Length: 369
Image (cartoon, rainbow, N blue to C red; front, side, top):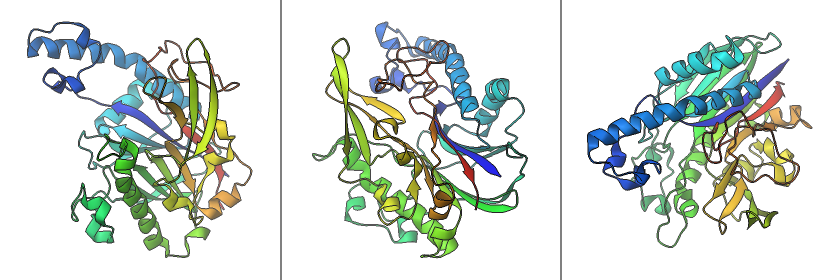
């Protein structure tokens, strides 16, 4: 009996327009900046036309990436609301995979832009095992005070009664063919702007570290501290941090070479330092673990993993030797692939857009103990 589990940040699956770019240049799309826009009314018309024209290709590619993942359970990030998820599933995903994901779950979280985590599930696994939902819990309202996680670093940007999760930790208790399986779906705090001499990753790391500690606390309270290693659970999502990266050195026309390096610290050390959970993507070759290409010009470009399937020790050991898959066909052509990793892009993929997402789906076939 096997289960296909996947995670994917689909990026801004929205059902609304954002017109704030008329007054805030930082939020204005680059193509509109090429033109003189005389009034807010004209700007709104142009923005609506731009978004609608671009979205169809984008969502076709998003659906293709999900179809290629072929998961029984799919953890998603950056979903506007249930209406957006249903419209995407019916209008796009259904055309790729047919009548598959009948179970849909989303709880409104804390994100200031209104983007949430969600889960799509089949009624049965591909080999016919029933997928049952026993319970769902949102932890969006949990505060630093609730878990006694507040410290001096957090006090620089937060208050003790602020919510820990900047989106949510959505907990699902499942039975897969009668076997228990717990799933924790997250989207950690994004890397912000530099502050007080720290880069955007370092300045926001205390927030992600607190989120990781809170996820671990939730699991330990569920199963008992010291007893989690024998349970079947997975922590899935976009965690906006990495423990290693591959520097892309060079420029277009002159060629590239790739250098792997480990990070001195990461918020995700909370999961890995004592074997609490295994990041199974690290089973792949060191140059082949990335799920996102980051670039701010030739002096700052690298490949890194932001998207994770963390498995409990029991689940990881039961699937020893198995490798997760990373679906990269929806990457834009600007993404620089190490030699031997090139893939055939989806039809109509652009240099920067349209694309399925800047993120890649991560999927793994698991046997439950």
